[in-house]
Image (tube, rainbow, N blue to C red; front, side):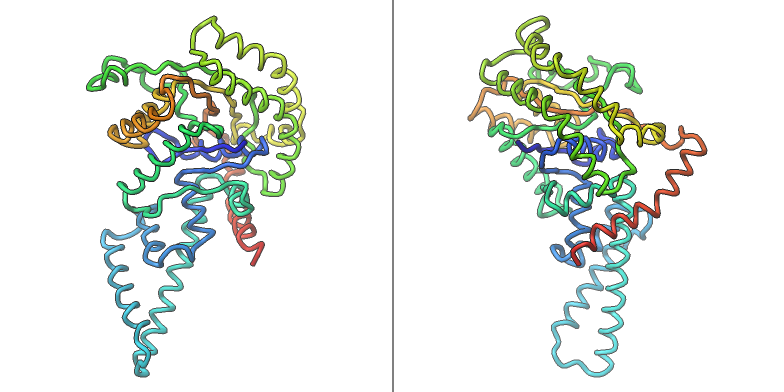
Length: 388
């Protein structure tokens, strides 16, 4: 079975958690599709020919708005308009040819700068080794065809989520921010304020989850090291993955509801309890776990969980996380309800991740992070150039 992971850019999500979740999913040995800011950036980097030069120039304004002038995009739109005119002319005078060559050189330098900018963006996401898994087709990228048109981007996201929920034939992965323990909240949740101006059906989302296993982040491993780690971990994780799929199918077949001490809890205990302790011992004894252990302060652990909520609740949860508008949420609910009962339980995976800011690191750990930058950049270039 394949997974699908939606992690659009949102004020309610933290970008570093995305790569943590992707690495944990790769360890299962599954293939999957990613809809995210990181996925789109990697696609822009690996496949520059898919996009126009003006689109690629626009990425600079998008990712690093503080580093360019306010009229950056307008200037380059004017420049590209002139370039199209020059390229269309078949018989240029000598002066025109020289001017065209200078403009082409200027544009080529700009394209190289865009590549460097994308490398920096991928490195900032701490996802250098992940690039290779997009290139070898382990990970597929779902992306809007009109990246700078918010309305069309939302329409594509809505359509894709709708089809995923109707089919229910893939493992859905929620962002880490879906889960926040009350002790991890910066500001305690004010339910009265939270429910203001929300419809009654949108006010309460019942959820349940089971912690499955804890793994190191594995940030710092190269693409080849990650491949070796996957070969080892996927064998360990297969029993819990099988149990998860059986849990998911049984919930659907028996139409089990979330209730404390009921069939939901007993099924979870029956399927997961016999295997989790042994699984965690195998993970803890892995050479990759021990390798990362010395970097634990820099690369925190993450706990993979099986979560559950109604299909309707999940749709509204994405809305609360500001992935799409309220009208979009209603549209998804209406579309999915034509094919299945939206009150039925949807089972998914998510990561509980507490990511430590670099400000909290020791001087030694900060040095490790900074020294890794050059290595990260080289890793991305190596992956991109493998087949060239």
